[in-house]
Every structure is written in C-alpha cells, then in structure tokens.
Amino acid sequence: METKLTVREQVVDHAITLMMLRGYNGFSYRDLSELVGVKTSSIHYYFPSKDDLVLEAVNQYSNEVMHALKAVDPALPANEKLAMYTRLFGKTLGDGNQICLCGMLAADIETLPEAVRQAVQAFFRANESWLAKVLEQGVKEGTLVAKGKPESAARTLFAALQGSVLASRLFHTKARLEDVQATWKAVS
Amino acid sequence: METKLTVREQVVDHAITLMMLRGYNGFSYRDLSELVGVKTSSIHYYFPSKDDLVLEAVNQYSNEVMHALKAVDPALPANEKLAMYTRLFGKTLGDGNQICLCGMLAADIETLPEAVRQAVQAFFRANESWLAKVLEQGVKEGTLVAKGKPESAARTLFAALQGSVLASRLFHTKARLEDVQATWKAVS
DNA sequence: GTCTATATGACGATAGAC
DNA sequence: GTCTATCGTCATATAGAC
Image (cartoon, rainbow over all chains, first blue to last red; front, top):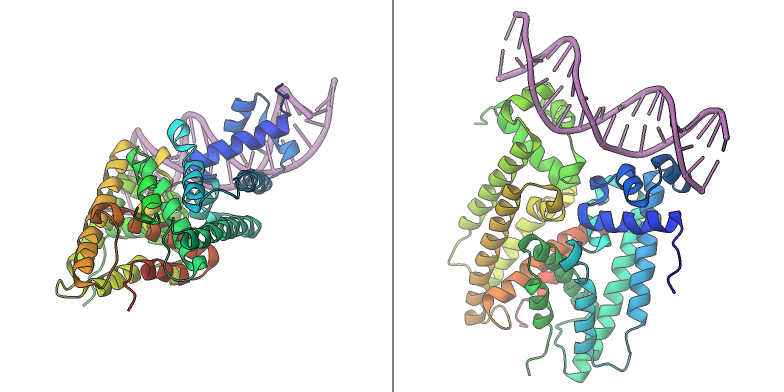
C-alpha cells in the first residue's frame, strides 16, 4: 500500500539524502531537478530559496528521528537502548555513505542562516537529553557506566557518535561506531 | 624577526583558515584572491586545480599539528598532556569559529579526490596513535581512565573531540570540549 | 610571476506563458 | 503547478601579453 509521494515530498527527501552525503554547499537545485524529474523552477515554486528548503529538510529529519526514538520500548535495558541508538545512527552509512544530517549541517553552519542553527541546536539538545536518560537508567541498572552528571556524559557520548560516523565513512568501516558503544558499556 | 611570506605561503595559509570555517565547497579562488591581493590566475599558477591546493593545505596542516605534538614534554603526566591536546584542539574556536581542518574535510570527503582521503586518514591515524600512548601512560599512572584496548579507547576519544568542536561552535561555547576531557580523567 | 582577458559552465532565482 | 526562457552572478580554469 505505497502512497505516491508528491513532488514536494520527493524534493525534501532527496535534499536530505544529498545533504547527508555532500553537505549544504555540495548539492544544487539542478541535482534535485534530475532526481525528481521536474524543472528547477518548479522546485523554486515550493521552496523560493535554498534556505527555505534546508530548513524544511532539517525539520522533517528531526521529526523522523524523534519518532524513531519514541518507538524504542521503554522497558528495554539501557545498554540495549544504546545499541539500538547506535544502529539507528549508522543506518545510512553502509548503503549511501551518508552521515547524520545535523552533524553535516553543524560542519556547514557558518554558511547557513540563524534559523537553521536554531533547528540544529534543538536536534542536538533533544538527542543529548534522550541519551542522558538512557545513561541514567544504565547506571542504576548496572548495564552502562557514566562518570559525572548524566547530561555531561551524554554530550560527550553524542559527540563521540557524531565523530565516529564521520570517521567510519572516512575509513569505509562501521567498526568505529561500535568502539564508542563499548566505551559506555559496563564490563560483564 | 618576522619573515615576509611568499604569495604561495599566504595562499595556503588562507585556504586552511577558510576551509576550517566554511569547508571545501564554501570558499573560492576569488576569496583567496581578495585576501592575498593577487588575481585568481596567479593562484592558478601555483595550484592549477583546487584539488592541488586542498592537498597541499592538508599536508601543511598535518605537519603543523604533528610538530605541536612533538613539542609536548614527554615527562608530563598523561592528564596534563590530554589537557594540552584539548586546548590545542579548540585553539581556533574562540576567535575564528574554526574547527579542525581534517574534521571538516572528513565531512566533505565525498566531494574530494582519493588522495585527500588518504591524507585525512593519515591525520586521523597519527592523532589516534598519539592519544593511545597518552591513555596507556595515564592508566599506568592512574591519572586517566580507559576501558579496553588503548587503541580502541583513543579512537573513541578522538571522535568525541571532533564531535565536540563541532558542537562547541554550534552552541558558541567551549564547555563541551571540557566535558570530553573530564570523561577520561581519573576521579581524584 | 603577475597581469588582462576570456572560455565555459554552474549556480540561485525570477518572469510570464500555459 | 509546471513549463520555457532568461537574468545576473559566481565558479574553475586557461591563453597569452608583459
């Protein structure tokens, strides 16, 4: 029961994919035009400027990730939650050489408008907050280890995951993501 | 006793600065032309293609960082070595909003030639190897904590530092770099 | 080595017909 | 909504005079 995607939806989807691969300054309306099968002027009808497009892209991406996080069973032990999160994080690495959209936009942030910075910051905070709760649970259970405040440890963990997808793609291996996961896992 | 820089040296220096700020696809020969005060055709005389320029930029940047690492006193305790490294890592954050050149190029890697990937990989490996030795020393001394193999922990630490400069710039604060440092520091 | 001049194409964006 | 046509600008890059 696949629903046909509108042109607008296709544009946003491909924009997300392309930016996760090449960054904001590495794709063009022409790229989207060829992928979707409409002229660039039609894309400008939906998104007058590239800034409008990237803002909608990051909002949709954020919603998708938040939805995936809410779908994680709260009854799971924390180490399994972290394993799921790590898999989610590296999901697009193997097939498309893509990294997290908001990690990529954080690299391009100095060439982007303030509204995008706000949206990317919100994504970071939401993920760090989710990870902080997982770490807190894990410490109580004894399935994870985290020094200091969970919020501080979660920021470090999130940064390590962002850095690791970058390195994973650079070296063509997913092993580096698992290194990170192991660092916060309690020794059994 | 300041030596006058040649045009070639100025071009490479400014290319490094600009890429650390906006990435490979976010600066142009025109930008360099205005900064150095020569025409773009003169820059093409030294670097026929942009790929030639970025390759020399990453090599020079790597040499500078390697030189700074060799200048670290081997007699220092490991936690102080890590503190120095963290400072070195975030040095360009405050004034210029710049992140590590090789972290930035890792984000842009899918738009860059293979030779650049090799050079960036070499930079990653060299830094991870240096950090692995520091962690090893720190564990022996009891000044740092690291689970598992030092090489694996060093990869995680390096990724966390790369991710943290990204986040530090995004949020306009250096606190996130210190979060990372604290994570590997032994509780006193 | 540095310049003027130019080739060639990509880019984001808009006007207006249908 | 989608198109054709186009504008103005910027990009990388080269040829050839000085």
